Every structure is written in C-alpha cells, then in structure tokens.
Image (cartoon, rainbow, N blue to C red; front, side, top):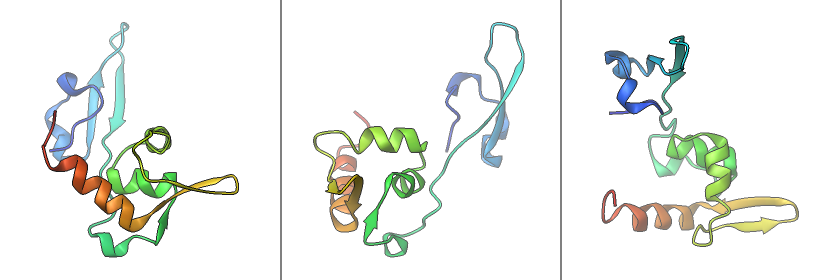
Length: 103
C-alpha cells in the first residue's frame, strides 16, 4: 500500500492514489498525492537513468532521487556536468538494498 508523506493523517482513499490530510496548525486541508513507479519492469528502462527516471522508477520525488544519486554507495557515472546511473548497476543496487527488507 502506498501512503502519503503524512502517514498517520491519511484518509481511506490511499487506494485511489490520493488523500486529503489535515496537517497544518490552522486545520486546513492539504491535498497530497502519493507517488508510485511508472515502470512495471526493468526492461522498460533506458540504458542510463537520470535523476528524473530514477525518481519515476522508485516512486519518489525528483529531489529525493537527486540526493540518492549523491550517496557514496549509489552507482553513478559523471558525464560532463550530468550524473547518470547505468541500468544494470541500478538493478544490482536495488536488489542489494531490498534483500533484508526494511531496517
């Protein structure tokens, strides 16, 4: 199940990929959308992934993917000013980081 960033304040419409959260001091409703991967298999991925593609695959915000790409153990390749992730190394990284489940 996908949850919004507010988690405990989610309503029951998480299954619709949309929830309305009361998460401000002024009790205003804030609409937040959950993210989920747009890719259904690794075969759909390009040979090299940029931050936007990594975000779409993992179902996270582009800023989160960008931060992840600057982690020491994340497999990146710098080409000029661009940072890309080789598809095969990305798959290995995902498999390595999902073997033990949530820690």
